[in-house]
Length: 637
Image 1 (cartoon, helix red, strand yellow):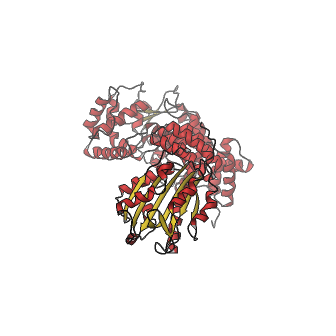
Image 2 (tube, rainbow, N blue to C red):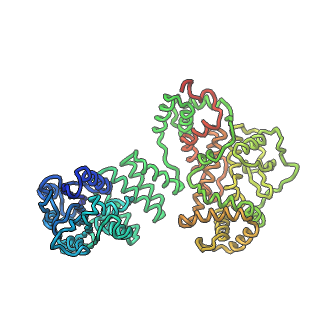
Image 3 (cartoon, rainbow, N blue to C red):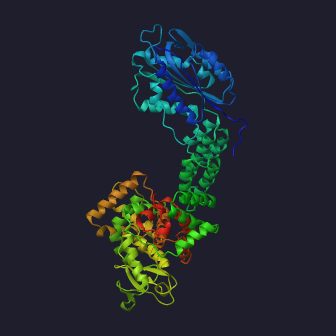
């Protein structure tokens, strides 16, 4: 990390003489308020002068605070009376070179000046209109000192707003942290040029570029322009300590985390930086949201603070939100930190029996169930190619031997076996067709085995058919049947990341007439593409084309690893919802071996624990379950 001998301060000096010819007092205050709101969030300490009769005298104590190495941004608005002075009141001039000299004497690390000026059309002995901004800018001596000046001059007749040019040119704020004033002026010039030369009645404007900004803000801007992201991260982490407020430091760290995650693909590094931001400002919403996304991107579960959930339990109890309190208690019980009150509530609910579902889950319910990483465009694509993908997948040689299914082991849909009844019930709740069910062999390792076929089937181990509680069966059913949703079902036929990548790539190539997506490098990709293309209906092609357009609009990136992780976590969440008990769901996850390339049991468990006490889960239960009396709020609430 680079270490700086000077802690840089950033000053924004707004020089706006009161001049009734330019604006009313109220309009001046509004303009200055807008300016303050633009520069203060960018990390500048703001000072305003010009309300009195001697702006230079007012500026002296402010200038005295500037130390060598500091960054200074000066904004001047007013009426130009000569090429190098603006009016004070009706006629008294303020010489602009004197203003620049006063500030330059403090030896700032870099200074930039914005001149947003108007002129009287009757001014005499002045340069031609097109030359006025250049002449005024040069009068400041900026070139000799290496400073940048952005100057705009427009006629007084068109000056409805004293800072109209600045409003037009000021770029929107981003997460880049305090801008180099040099880079800010350059961005303003480009933005004004892109909007046309006037639109604010600005007759002309000019940017006189100074020397490169050598402050840390300038170095950050230069590294960003060069896309030297490791250098940007290094500099911005060092810059954090130069920022004046906790909010600014937290925001800077959030911007660094975005670069780590998006540009450098370092999700773990982003998490470390965001955890530092959370320590600084524990309740800042954008930090917490960024941290959640970073954990999701990394595949890691966010840490859980039991103290927060103990507080939530007490709050929910006092508010009469008993089911939410129960979910908090389940979480604390699973973490091994439950107190007697928590344990009593969990035991009471445990004795209440299986959940009672009031109605099948709808689209909004599935939206609430889905774990981060779900992609609506990818879901549309996979649902569109589903039928063709299943046929093609069955034609490919299997990567493992499939169990044989005989009529003697088939379990009738009308069977009274609890497992059969539970799976058919769960299928109705989840909105999927229940596959054919078969009794597995005595030595079956897995409780549930999916057997791909034209007619999909599930093999149930003997221990599932006998000796498994209703809640355990509900978890198994919910987790297993989620894979029969149209957006997930292809993954039973293309189970590995490589298989799914080939399927998605081949599907995109079918509708990609503009070369927006890279072709797959696998030897069988072309064959898969041709086989799929022969089997797609016009409607399926249209759906796939729409999905491909949405993917292309965001750069063509298809996040299959997050998608697979999201699908696994969502299936476990569905099982938790149906069984209603966290401890049962966690035991079910740990009893099943994780497939290669899929989230570990520990990762799935961590997600279940967090989801259990989430608002989304509580809202789902309130809408779709008949809650037992002890989990309902008391009358009158």
